Length: 110
Image (tube, rainbow, N blue to C red; front, side, top):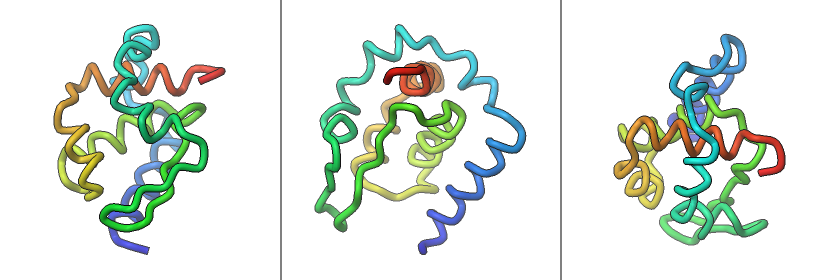
């Protein structure tokens, strides 16, 4: 398992232990719904796998913890996580965008 994956798992465990960060709690699910176009192309396809740079199973976002989503997006934006497509997408997101997307995907039924 790569170091970045271990770091992501550790970050997720910490979020569950202490609760989600304030920026995730401040997200607007309705605003997030309007921002999902960039996500749906990969995350909206059940069982989708990417082929670049490696074969990679694309995780389902619906039902994820909002704090985890924000943490993951920030890690892609900072370069801590290295998937090239996600790094490019996260680089264009503001903290508010991340919180809104997280609120949308964490809401029941998404």
